[in-house]
Image 1 (cartoon, helix red, strand yellow):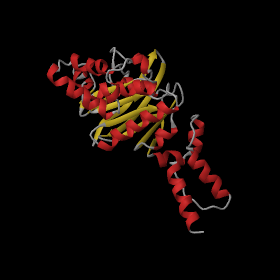
Image 2: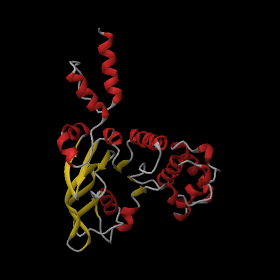
Image 3: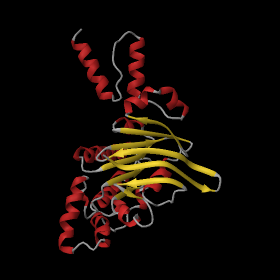
Image 4: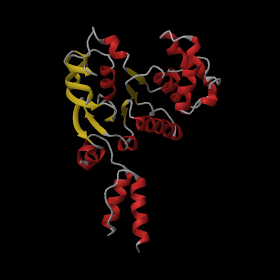
Length: 275
């Protein structure tokens, strides 16, 4: 059952300069969907349109059966949480505890209930032991995990990551990708991630590829990566595991297409054990 339904969506910042051009797609409830594309392809603009931060020029956006319009905007925003790109711009409190508490205070959660909620969601992102830490003592990945905890505490039905790993070092990227996968296993949250990280794309359920404001590919990761020519035309790449599998077949080693390195390594180990 779709929780997000977009039909013929168009948007422009300046008259007669379209940024999003007649885009249509659906996202199933409880799924993990990635939207990818090169810089300027329109993927972050789509995220802002879905959350009502920008107003579409034309088309319709349905969120959990409600049309995104002025009448339903407040209710729809209550269903969506967003984690943005720069972790430093998202830290509001003087400590991790204060930061997670910020949204709860705005929602007038009773003080007696607040500590339990803070500890629950800090634990979900692995930040319990940092609850009394100041932001200056945290890495970028840790700050993003705090941002995720603060959003989760609001109980959104849809969690949007707007290039949330793009400003992080490799360790920070891995931390956030692990959090995303752990959240997805619970199946009670729809995850939409705006990204250009091919490794992250490979782990999602469905993929939307944007190029110059148009939706040029959509499907499962396996279906998307099969169209290597189209990906290269949009300045994207395929996972290294697929490239390696292709080279191995050229050398006479019969392996399948694996979008994860783990799968390829496992098959190679099985082949070796039969030798």
